[in-house]
Length: 108
Image (cartoon, rainbow, N blue to C red):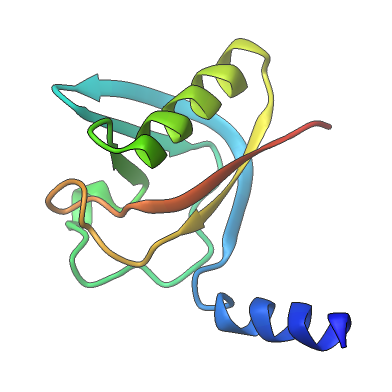
């Protein structure tokens, strides 16, 4: 039963694939964190994303989730860790920039 649930969960999010890479850009503009990874995104880019910003993610610091993602990104940069990003498939936190749904630290 657990395997079926895990497989179904994986299939549900397969269109928003994970990126596992080092953070190579991190910037805070007002209450928005903008970051990118060294590896290119492997998933389909949402239509809301501007052409020049396709390599970026943006998350709002006005939410608890955004604050936790920012803390994870700072930890990754400070400790030279890779991150795994699952994309949300929208641009809800910044116009023209894709929003991450989650960010996980990866130890190599």
